[in-house]
Image (cartoon, rainbow, N blue to C red; front, side, top):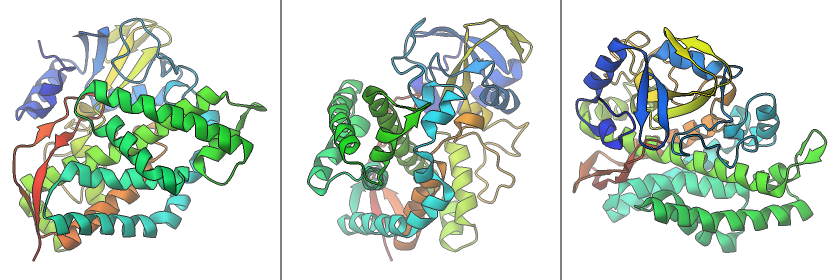
Length: 389
């Protein structure tokens, strides 16, 4: 039996054939997991979209990701954006929305592009780099700007975020988070006493039904924003650049202007689908894809499988840079559509544009290593030489 929770599955060269065969057998099927017990796996686009849209039947409050353990409710349930349903979800999302809206991001797009260009220029000057670290530097820096981290703290915050997101073992990453959370807690208290126009201040002073959020809830939501804001861009950028290395004709099309960068990035978001899954819990008995789902049972949307469904996408296992329409689920759907999607796209455009402008070839210099995660699937190590001229 295929174990969809095995990270090794998602880097196998025969992955498309494996997923297609499973979907053909049944688009909704029972999966036994080592840590979370039995769950219902959703493999088709149509049914995945149904689950993500229908928050009345498929709740986020029992957890949004595998890994919390069978029968366990995550600590942040009902307190974090990712772990609440409407209407409370909208209340928690509201103070952060202006920072990530299309209008707000347009105002910052020039500075994001300039920062991306300087980071790529530094990497080019070094010649040999780990591409994972190079692309991760941009979302970390942008997040520090949004949070208005004081200049004297930025090196420390970047190091802690590096540990939380880039360390090689789960234990090291958890240790990084344990250092980040107290710092955010301290900053929330400072901004409540003397608020500014930054993201921390707006979330820290926002009132839900007339009352300020508990400090612990503010910290949990800020940590959630930081994690999402860094991880999606980091992994999509690294995996997207790997795809272009493996398909040099696509790199050429982009460099020569034969493909438009915005559409190409949407296709790379679909094709990589680094956020491999989304978890929901049935709030009542229901039917899905011919299966009876009982109240309290967990349902897992496998995003990669949905985004590679031939019923929704022509030639789903090919990268078609000008694919249109491209209604992929890589950034979610419905109420929980990624709040940071406009910012993530601006950062990806800045990174890829700078790379295409300054680099003629990305030449691997050693073996790459996948990160072994089914939450944000990507690369831990991608050593390359950036060739110019």
